[in-house]
Length: 241
View 1 (cartoon, rainbow, N blue to C red):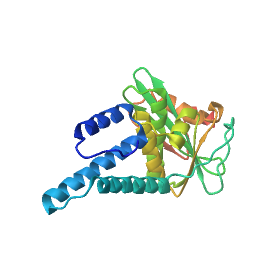
View 2: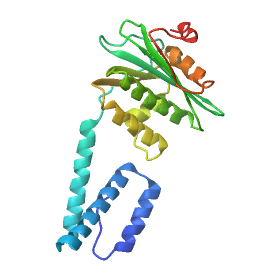
View 3: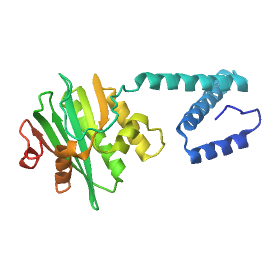
View 4: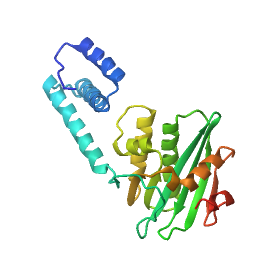
């Protein structure tokens, strides 16, 4: 989207806004939001201070806002670990870090979310099973699982973690997502949450390397509330650790 507004073209501008919101391209929406904000600031300046700017000045101001926003977001982007192929077996995290495995199970009456935390010696540190009401797509459920797991581990004080999921589309959305949809917003939530951690990475693994998280997610489907385990895993997880 380029800035091509001219004096006296209010109706075409409104029509352009409607068109771009229907197309829902993230970069375009950002420009529209900051463009509207620049117009609102101009309106307030004219009403309350009796000052006015030319259309080119308003456009320049809006573009500066867009550039500042983009630079700020780029600076906050999470550095992530990438692998050429998904691991088929679980591996210990780097020294001093925790590994967080996450999974989701989708049923007709809701979803189950599960996650497992292990240390750099491979020992079970914690796990949780969280039932999630309502209907979610498998991809949305996986992303909700990662978001809730990150919040939970942050509350427990583990700030150097490696996150793994067997949902390749979920990991791709976290790393590269830009869609203005529920999935896109969930990915943005996760990227925002990741900034609270001193060290974090996101990796895709095969299901065979994610069995404890899968067992917890499946068990969550028959629960009514969050259940957590610390240092001593439940019996149904011991067999798949």
